[in-house]
Length: 225
Image (cartoon, rainbow, N blue to C red; front, side, top):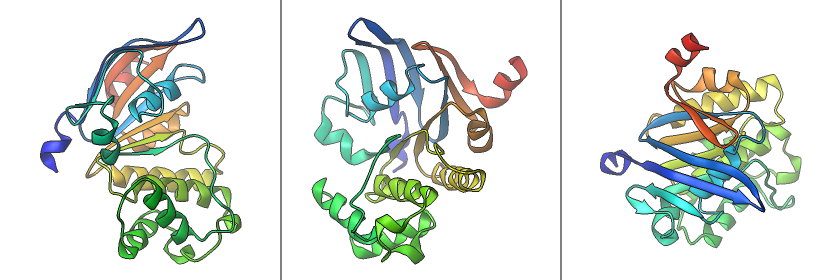
């Protein structure tokens, strides 16, 4: 595990363009372990960058490696990563346990019932394992989304706006969960809410209009700001 976490993520000179609009302009950074906050205004290019890393968007120019493997080798990198997109949905009539089992099967992962129970416990949904997805609140739905990204125990967890739409209590709970997950893996968390970064991580990336303006510890950035 420790070998995989060394240089877990490397991004080199990544550019991306949508129909004449440049979304990313030569982004470079490396990350190994812990929670790394990706901060930027809406439209800064955060989601584009996360989708490229998560292999749901094709890389146009530059290099992205996960544990030494280029993202073009999806068969190698996808088992190493989990992805919570900003928007998602599940079958409302399925139970939480059924949802995790079904999604794992679709992705080709073999997970036991014990593993499903452990993941639901970690995101605070163990008591709702047999509840229907349609019965969940918005905060519980976000935590179920996090559970589906964690069920195969990825070394890199990518979360896009994890507290979007949550009330203050739900936002605090999500921050607590993500902070704990960063103890034994790399968590790359995108947000436009500075409070989420300050409460969750000590490592920061600041993206603005497709350019990476800052990479480093949170404390020096706060002093400079």
